[in-house]
Image (cartoon, rainbow, N blue to C red; front, side, top):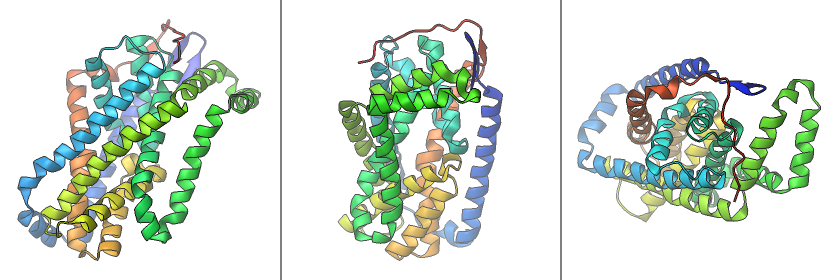
Length: 340
């Protein structure tokens, strides 16, 4: 994203190419999982899967989306976007799902463009909502991973590293003199001088979104939301014949949560490859599941979570094609929304 005075250019074509690359990479990962897990044995597991549970699995995912939408809409109000109708907000939220499969999820910055188009909010401030979503989700899945990390200390270093990094970002954003001093230091570097205004807009957004009250509300919503997908993972295991019970449920929540962390820090499109390998590996190592069951469970949960979301997001694009046509605008509206 580059800014030129009063105008801006957002590389939509580049986002499209990265999205296509992410989708192709997802197909390669899907094929690789099938080959590693033995296609015949996986076929047998899927044939005997209790498919009557699948609607409940999807319900767990939808529960996750609903609570995360509440968080998204709450964040919009915090940065001053109060006039947007909840239906329009929902459309933009769901349309962002396919952008998760771009490398490092950088395509999600396109949401900042959409928010500018519907409300006039500066793009840099709108992008802070994406950042806050990712950080609050990260803290949420770390909370859900806590008991598992205590039980399996080999995962502690990665847990501590990610938790420390997220808390440091939040802390720096709330120490205003320190954050402004860092921005002034960046402004002294010639190649960053043209980003002076966007940097300040970005900081004002993060300062509002990472206030203690906002962070507690967002992380609480995120924890409940991701618990929904943890329950979906539990149902996948039950559907494959794993005994019901607290042990299976707790392991399902831990494995899905921690694998989400691994996928996020990998910076791969949608965590593709890293998340799948983590889920399958942990199911094998921690629950002693056969490779074909672990692989089948991985395929099912990724289809019911990541690819289900990508699918409905692409559906929104089909009826909102203008979302991918925004590229330039000579006189964007600029608001200085009051930040709560």
